[in-house]
Image 1 (tube, one colour):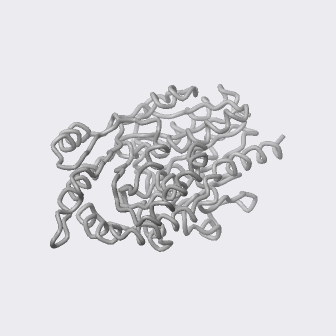
Image 2 (cartoon, rainbow, N blue to C red):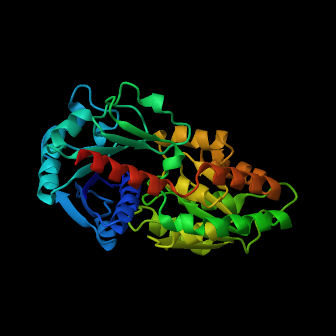
Image 3 (cartoon, rainbow, N blue to C red):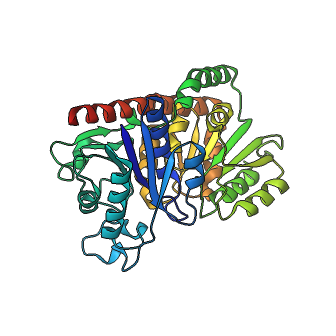
Length: 375
């Protein structure tokens, strides 16, 4: 099978869409399939990561003309596509045809059924990755990995023949997280028995973090001090994971260097699973990394970094799988709750119950089954 992925990364979009497509692509390659990525040259794009992972990258020509958003009935996130959707669809179709694609995989909130019909070459299957259920799709297969999502949310938005993969059963976490799951959960269980406190904290606000939630979260950790205490011990290890294109990277590095805590900034890490397994607490958004944290039972203070993350963040909180902070200013109050070892362990267990680490394999099984039926 040749799978053609259409996804973008930018300072406005973030890098999560490309990264979860890469998780799928890596697994498909392990199964003997070829993957080609198609996207625009945007500030904050991740072509370097795609190529470093050994996949082909096709750069689409720049769009010229009125933005998609000027078109009546455009999707809510139409501004993510800075130009006419028909141009984009035609260029994507040409790239898919040139690659000999059997399957087109779309992960882009700004594109809907109209684009899909125009971009999809004859005889090629279509899979859509979505989180919002806010626009129509012409998909054969649709995956929405979000907690609290129901298949009924897509009633009237997909063809009756579309197969829906819904909920964190299909959470697309890389195999390494599944491999480390048992050891991570065992370590956390042992810590709970000892009533161990928080010794290490991982901050990960996505590859872009346009709003500098990383720096604000570090400041909140430094400042937290319940009455009669000195707050977190100076020896508390804080690791801040950022992308090389993050606009506030230099500022966060300066803050970490001056912190009273044992803080460090790491960039474009390849060992995120190991870092999550070793951390006692995480601060992060409600995007794709939320499912990675859950797979490892990592207790999390989750922040809403974009409006489209709010439903997922609330669902995590309702499931007991995270503590919700509406802003970095609320991190201290959340930390007060999780400083109780029993509560920390409780959140970790609920997180682990939400994601078992095998969703990626299930998704790839469904992709292969789709193509088998189309032969």
